[in-house]
Image (cartoon, rainbow, N blue to C red; front, side, top):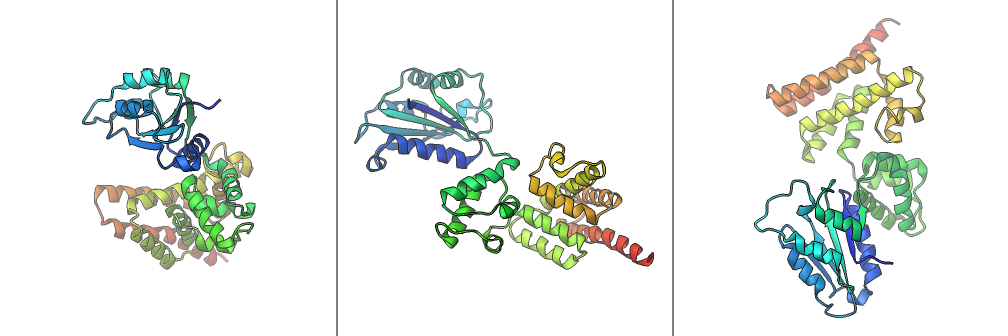
Length: 339
């Protein structure tokens, strides 16, 4: 039996929008949706006004949907507003909802205060859906699910590109998949070349490419990637953290490999997508443990200098790239001299 009240909460907007769409489609005929869907922002509208609308008969048709966003009173520490919510009026409605109204409460927060009376009443009487961000290791099934929705094929061999470029943001993933679907058409197959060409590039991807530039001792390429990220309004301090994260994973994977761990066993210790671990295993071969330790130390030193204002941030980052490549260059020259 359909519920009269829904609570959708969590930080994953794609899942929230998906649930909301399905509830509206189930409740209202297409011709009734224009006039019988009302939306309110509870940071601007008192909840008692929403309750009054929910209790009012539909303008046309037999049913209506009332959507209330941002119920700050469900948070442990709600923001102060210019008005007070009459939460008791909502509790009374929850206990006796109008049979012709479906009320959807959308709380785009990671956590709610489950101790509050209103939450307890919602949990008892409403359909509560958790819409939290997906885990990195679940992204493969979402790629397949969204590809099926668009009636296209995305080979498993290129799932790594989506994990690398888009990450776990399902709304961004769907947008990228829609772009590819328009190119290949219904029933089409996405090729690696097309995916590499069309997928929007993320800062994480450029971080990986900078790691590769260090491995290749290509200072020009590394600086070019840095300049591109600056144009995309990325902060040098954030980029230091990004590189540090990449090199820490490479270091962790190298140590685990030396201890005899297989790739599938590493996931329990390295909290990252299997693709990230796979790529780290390829990259770790280019570095010794000593080099990785020195690189991580250089990153920490640069982070400290930037935060202390000891050097202009852009110059500090370019100097960092030089230092990282010099670490690799020194090892290469030493090896060449010993041959």
